Image 1 (tube, one colour):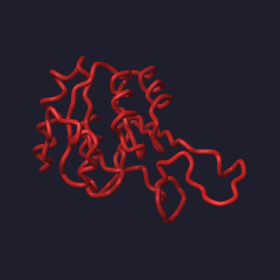
Image 2: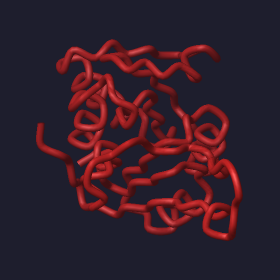
Image 3: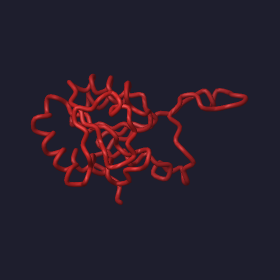
Image 4: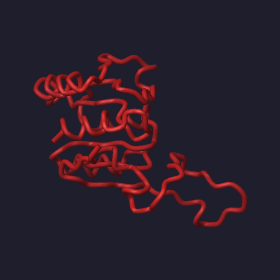
Length: 166
């Protein structure tokens, strides 16, 4: 499931804002999962940036490039994403319900996917029709503001290996 979600999130449309830019792998499974995930990325033509530096971690590649890092558990992943993420869409692939719940609660992003591709962050996929844009800011209104303009929305999607067709 992780391989399918990763490839769909990165390669479906790599130049759009919901494409994956960084892969974080839990150290507890890195020895077995990383070789398989790296091989799949390389087979798909993705340039993998191992041992990424600060610039790589902040880069929005918008291409067939991805930074890869190993983290020590879900809390380290959450801290990493909240430091380096774009605030657009973040995803976790896990069988651990507690980790998934903690991830959705603590990630600062406009959309959070659980066991589903980041490619689902799209106005049409959310049922909004044509998309004008996706705000990653919590306060984005201008002019007179009432309570509706002072609220923000966080989208959480739970999947079971869901991917979007090309």
